[in-house]
Amino acid sequence: MEDFDKSRSNDPYIERLAKVEKVHYLTSDFIKLVETKTCKTIDDVIEHFKTVRKDGKEGTVVKTYDNKWKNGTSKEQLKFKVIA
Image (cartoon, rainbow, N blue to C red; front, side, top):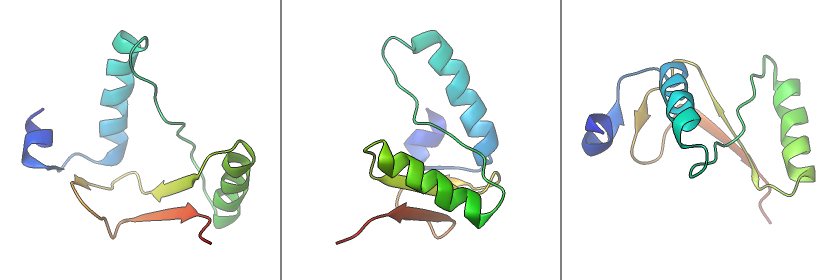
């Protein structure tokens, strides 16, 4: 909650994800996690994007494991979605 109140966290994404997964275990009746998939190449990312679109989802966001969180737009993430 402290990081949320500050609107930023210095913890790497992989550590924050692990914390959320622990909380989810205790609250799975109330909270649904967004799918997380590790991609090693751009071809992996494109294939994952095609899969989520086929499943009716909007797209995906590419992050690095050491990505820090802040409230607002990040230059350290890449959003893949269809624009018309």
